[in-house]
Length: 97
Image 1 (tube, rainbow, N blue to C red):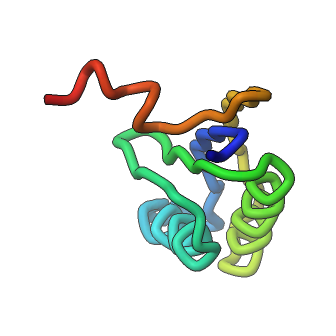
Image 2 (image 1 turned 60 degrees about the horizontal axis):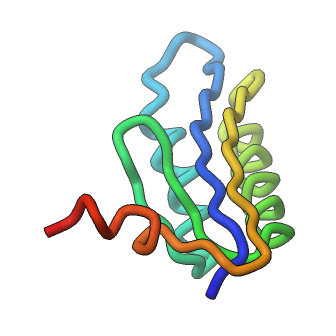
């Protein structure tokens, strides 16, 4: 079982006020390519895995935003780190039918 859950909302500042959705899609692609378990939600994406690996993914997401021409990036991050492991399914199972 994974030790951590990390939720991230990435907010890139674009040069000419372009739509940020293509940037967000590229950030989610970084997560997808990493191979970790993740879930996209309306306002953030949650990843499940080793905390250091998830931090590395966040760095790659921010680097990707710069590669695409973003002037700056705000990354809002929430972390659940436990000794006994954490999973999205376990935390939300009582809400799913």
